[in-house]
Image (cartoon, rainbow, N blue to C red; front, side):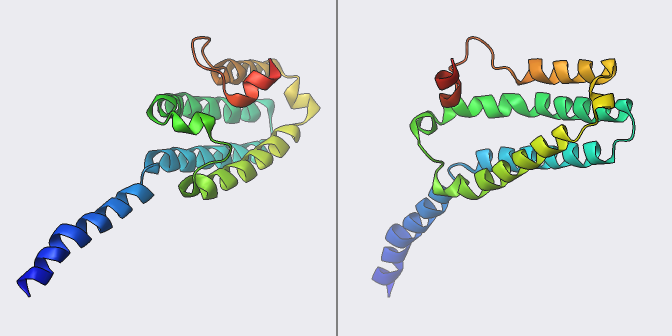
Length: 152
């Protein structure tokens, strides 16, 4: 009985722990993706409810503020997980959230396109859009993402 207990403690438990850790390798990325999806949903809802140009600008600026807070975390993944730069598709652990992010991004695009011409031409909305565009650019010292290399 002691031998069986010893085998269990020294062989089985480390394997179970290791398997649990492997499945959670990209937990911080999944957390960031979940946060980004929530940010996008909040933006989409705000744009859909917007009645004035100021409402639209506020939605864009709120999204930009949230993005500013999340960006350093996202950028840290580039150094932490260099293997992901070469990957043609996300690891299994990230696939579900990447699929959700893709759906959310499509909704975000549609919501942005639904902004009325009247509101989109407003100076306050143009300022908010310009701010968001500037914030979404990667610093020049960063390595370009695969799609950016193709477009240059």
